[in-house]
Image 1 (cartoon, rainbow, N blue to C red):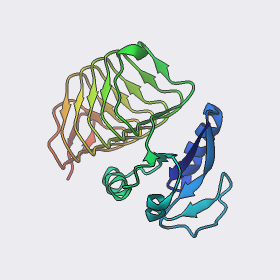
Image 2 (image 1 turned 90 degrees about the vertical axis):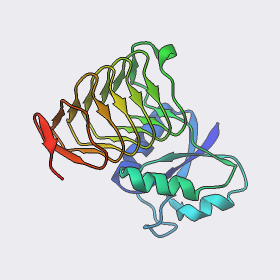
Image 3 (image 1 turned 90 degrees about the horizontal axis):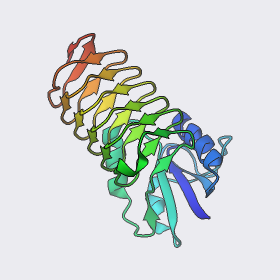
Image 4 (image 1 turned 60 degrees about the horizontal axis):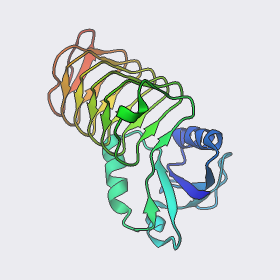
Length: 208
């Protein structure tokens, strides 16, 4: 059984710890977090140190990100250079795949409980799909996308890197989303999204 630690000891980190317990294929050893004192017990495990200490572990260790901000997640991963640290894909036990063999993933992805993934879906690395996410057929996700609870991504959507989907937001079929886009909660994206913009409303329009 592989040892596993979580980066991020906040609320989402605790949720991930609960899911890891349900999967029951890892030996969960605790958390790494820059903002919480080493040794702190947070109910689901102990803080083992700050993130830089991952570069000094002396045995293989699987690690999962529990960081909701895409840019911060990207920066954190860049700081981990220890070849003994691996980032597996973590998939909750009740995720429904229409055709799992047709789904391709890189590394470090997280798919939360009660989510559904259709056929011919492609994901890059370090995508965070929270609870009740729906991803339609032929959708492509790049890297470091954060998808909050109850998001609906329709079929044939193309998603780049470091985008944030707010709670209950929707991307309709065939839209293209580039880089550093934010879709506000409950918003419905009906057209291609411009890099670096925030979209709000139904239909969603540029807010910032």
